[in-house]
Length: 289
Image (cartoon, rainbow, N blue to C red; front, side, top):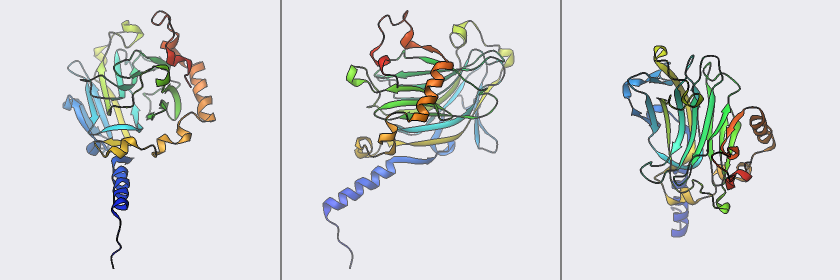
């Protein structure tokens, strides 16, 4: 005799099923999860299809984006940045909402430099169209010599920017202080390689040397563990995802030590201390960890 289920129980089981299926928790692949957004002849698979190459030359930059959009979770990819003289180039990995609306965005921007000088990574956060929250860190390794893992963890409590699991920035939810926080709009995942020699290297003093073109950046090992939208409303309403757990609401002791080390020895710019731009320190700057 078949087992009978009550209607409330069936509805509950269906909610669990659809919530599970709306949460992507597997290694991503370029073919399945991404598409080319810009200059398809400058994007190609290499290394037997395990790696994606982006190219920048005088004719165009290039880029790709996720096919789906997400609301909270963690996204990661391994990137090998432009080698040699990369001044004036920007290699980006970021999440962004529909830019036609009031924008939410979370940015990694890798600012090229002259040969032999350290790469700078700039991070920024936009919430409800308000940005200008840049921080810059000099990386403690050569990111063009090999692949390194760059990750964004985004939940209701904070946004973490991580480099090889080392937190380089914590952006906390300070809505209680009247500070906008990105939590209502879904965001896609984007990567681009483009020319920005009007600002990227030493404020635009160092220009691209086009005799060094083409400039190449490489991406692989895409990982998405996040709430995919469109999906059931339960996916965005639930607080039962791992990234909302108590241990992911603040840095653990090891992460905190690493974060202090980055801020002490590798941070070169913080909008919170830029009195020329912000004579009154922004409210969120008083709770940076």
